[in-house]
Amino acid sequence: MTLWRVHVELEDRPGRLGELATAVGDAGCNIIALHVVGEPADDGSVTDELLVRVPDTVDPAAMTAAIERAGIPCTLLVRADAVELADPATTALALARMVAADPGSAPRAAATMLRARLVDPSAADTGGFTHVLRVGAGQLRLGRAWPFTATELSRAAALMELAAQLSLRGPAAPAPDDRILVLRDGSEVRLRVAAAADAPLVAALHARCSPATRRGRFLSPAPRLAPGELEELLGGPDGESVLAVTVDGGSAVGLATLVPDGDGSARFGVIVADAWHGRGVGTALLRRVADTAAERGVAELVGSARPDDVGVTRLLRRAGLRPSAEITDGEVRLRAALPAPVG
Image (tube, rainbow, N blue to C red):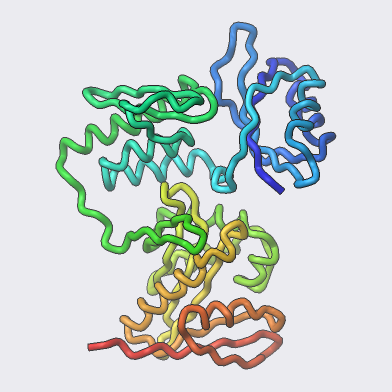
């Protein structure tokens, strides 16, 4: 399966959206998300952006041909990334928070919001579409493969204006526990301590995970968190959680929790979004909470797994720990001793 971004010009009349969905479905594809990206034309039509999951056996061009046979013009077809499934409003808020903490990050945040790249103002035309965004005395040149809309540019300008206002107050101190991690495949994530304000990011991460991934973390595939579970995932009153988020901060891709038991041990749990499996996110998260636990004087980590799930045991070993296990009441109880803190 691959993810594609499709722009269509949709008339403002009853049933047209249903005809679009039917055309995409008849082509064997599935609409994952849809939102308006363009301003209404004189005839009331708008540009809608679709994120469409296309099976490997289907030619994306065949899908757009099916849409156009339904009388709906397609103006764009480009590959998309799974990161773009993040909720746009949550991403915008996360980017605003990033700019508030570091006004100098505003150009990168604006580019991320528009899914664009920063272009050197003195560089020659590299193709595609470019736009120079001017805010006060500063300017920003952005480029991407499809046109910018006035709505998108106004959102980016708002971020730049926020940065300009914050810069007048002096530099902000960087978060001490915030660092960029380069993964095995060269992609990057940001590791930081989770806070109560991250509840929407964590809830969205849980909802995006497959039933198998949720079962591995919670011993249940339930798509909704039970009351109190979200609070515990964020560390609760006595614990701590570490988030792995995309570099722009708009989407959580992994979470590790640490909750002291009060007897020299602490319960741990790790969950990683399916699209990020196999890149080293879980190992990095577990190492981070294991180091935190050791610094707090915790002697061992404890956890639970299903008898047929060996993934947690492998994760502990990759993190440099030596777990032991015993089966109790149909569950595997894991224990992993922690090294004593140095000094």
